[in-house]
Image 1 (cartoon, rainbow, N blue to C red):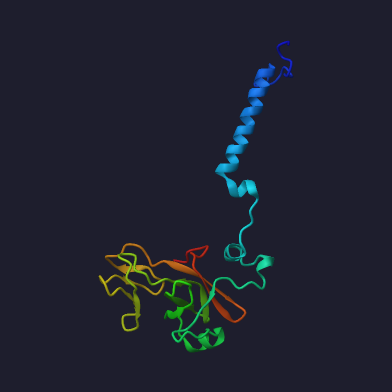
Image 2: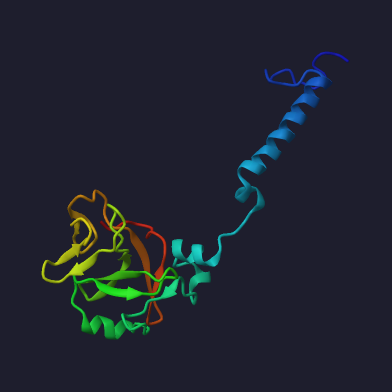
Length: 189
């Protein structure tokens, strides 16, 4: 076989022999298979489940009638009516709710308007994991274990905690408040 049989003479990386061609083909095949194992979701073309899709892209047309997460319940385990909640609460005072599968309590944030914020606060202290409670007299969250304090958005105002309280996603749709156990797309703090 003549040298340059597989080459066009212009490309310096061109294949010159049948052996080079076979090595190139085997290398490409092995690389493609390895990439399929390393990046399986891309190679298999998996779609996001509806819960994840609607949490990340709530304006997607498939999410029009979808209610993500769990329904928020009040302290008496009754479904929260958005209109009633907004009429009976003051902006800036977090509202205790239940509803996530782990039986935890969380807090809704009522903004001026009034309207319910797109995020809620998980009251797990970032210092040692104690459950903080809203103190109406001091107007902030207080940890009963070591005295950490957080403002109405969950930011640390007094240690020993160094990180803000974790957030959850809140979706208000079809006169329901829905709690999604994941961080909101944008941290508002």
